[in-house]
Image 1 (cartoon, one colour):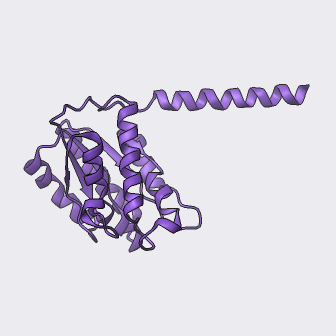
Image 2: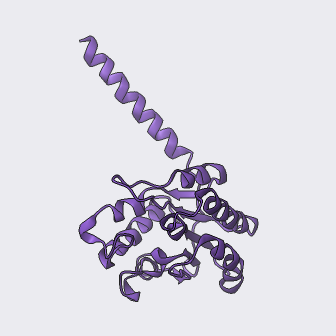
Image 3: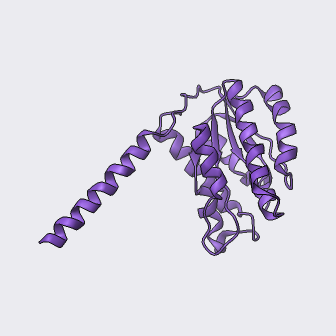
Length: 205
């Protein structure tokens, strides 16, 4: 009897902590039907490993009914992305930004604190312009994939809308990868569907 009571209390505690974590998630604005979403990143945004019409931005545009601009560049490092970022904002005048960066830094074993500094600077640029950011965590190679801790630290300090393990979950399914670091078309669709579902859940679309 004592054991059952103890177990029940533990379960209740976990539920309460989980709900509080959800309550602290940042809000995103409701996106008008003519809103522009800027998908900024490297090869994971550019759809490497799949056809152009299979990229997550193309599929997400169909799901959300909002215009999505794909500005991903395969092989680009975060230091180059940071230099490019302001110009893309100026060019497209987006209402919101989906940021997925650092994959190449991680694969090339560049210092992760430098990558984190570049991603943080991109978020600051967007914030200074009043643009909300959706940050996608990128995993480090390993047996059990999960977002590199730097992304969690960035999300906590900048209070962006953070989707932590979406990329890790996708890349963790070896049957549906095009290569060691990139999804195939079906997996890019899963990325788009997950982002779309999260936007709907918070009434952003």
